[in-house]
Image (tube, rainbow, N blue to C red; front, side, top):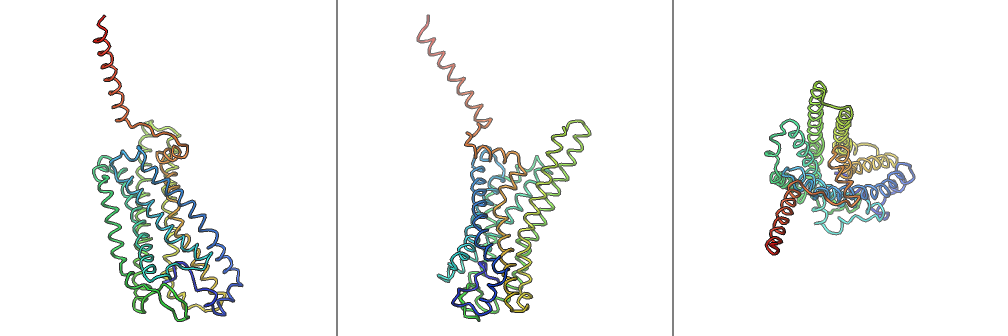
Length: 366
């Protein structure tokens, strides 16, 4: 498995070819990307994920009995965990040359386990959100009974437990070891585990992290678009839909498709690189080829984290309520009263007013 941080050892352990590749443009581009791109993604992603959590805690979503607020909060938490366990480590390694996983073998094991399991959990929470949204379009009367808040918690916990359990072999198969070049790495314990990881596990990774979630996202969003457009055509035939509403439906359709494409475009490249790694190892070992491969691993690895930074912005595009709440948070606007709360307050005020009038009449009979 390629090093998640792309570290190939410090200058003291660098071979002559490693020093030679530093003269190539690909190596310099890779270095620049690793030093300057991760901080941007971290800032943009942290802001978006924190905003998503805050919005889900507002009355508009907190008062809902559906699973969507729970799922969206869990997605934002997973995205944040991945940004600060994976991408932050890439940046620290790029600017300091230090891989913190080398400090203790437990850091190597636990960090790799958390990153892989959280990637899978994150993808399938997004799948659950798509299924919930598709159900709300196809069977709007049943969605609240099917996707309750309690069931949302069960989905999140069950998904996390499943993927953390199935990825637990990493705790036994990874360790801090010295490779054939004399460089200390967080790597496979032995050749058998290495063959398993580069064989069966990378295909599992491709299916669970990219292809199956991507297929569900595309299919689910396509069904949503089809159903919404079909309903719009019926409304147009009845003369009940205004042009501005039709433009909004078209915009939402494009936003849903964009959400699916962003997921595939950011997760597929690294999965393909993992599948191709055994073949990439057979390429020439000259400095030029090494520099090109390191650039490819860097670009595909960082692209994977872009998906964890843009979900908030995708939801802003596809949801008018979400967009309105985000604007309210940014402008520090007070939360509107829910209909039940407002009605209760009106009843309380009316009842209090009657009590005050009765007290006045009793104390002043004339």
